[in-house]
Length: 362
Image (cartoon, rainbow, N blue to C red):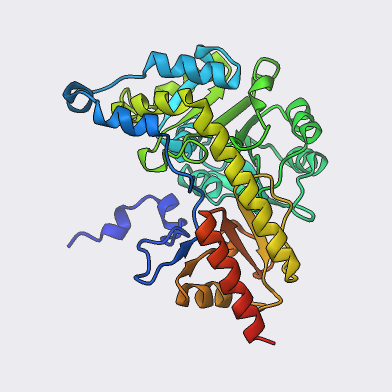
């Protein structure tokens, strides 16, 4: 009888089966602050476009939409040849890993951060080398120091960082690009509601690759559409591992409408920033320390409620409120949860619920 485990690649055996995103929502769900999406919703222009999509758009294979690529290039201030479409940021990360990471390659990952960098590194047989941030701040000097100790293929950076929401200082990013001769991948999935735009450095640094998403301020999370920004020579190599139909036609058509609706983008950004400030103000007001987030997610120290953050996650879930256990992001101590900005109603319900839980522990 065939032993299927004997046929599986060794790299697959190193990957955990559990994901932080829940498979299903509890029946008593009242507030979901566990996922980075746009609670303000999608542009009305996107909805109108859905109603008028032709049967041909849905029934036929769809290559890259040149109109969309031109609009994206204008948005991030590069040329169309600097853009490659992907199925969400994660799909872009997968293509980058397939292109550059080989078995036993060393890959630097500052932590805490998005766990999928580790996933894609291990999937390709690479070796993750974790660098602890001090007070959740990235140090360019520390990254350079680590890359000088052994041959390193690639560095993953997240700006703004997930789960902290903190931005990387431009001087630290430039220092890494200047001194490290390998590939530097900067994930800007959470950058749309900030002033962060690393694409301005693409002309100067050929080893810089940026990935971006339509899931946050544009509200297109379920369509799985994102893009890579890089030097044209880098783009041509990554394209080799991509499917010719990587992004579905409907997603590309709707992304055009999302990008065109500047008014909706501005309203979304204003709303998300206002609600983030509200959450931080309320949480710090009751003695729960928060990171100085500039985007949609915030890391919250819940030690005052319980030194084991998993217990806090469970108590909130019992009350119909979802947050994320920050241990998935390799936060050094298990006393943090990650929250993401939700609707005004859900944010207020979360604050009231966590106040009630805190008061019950006194």
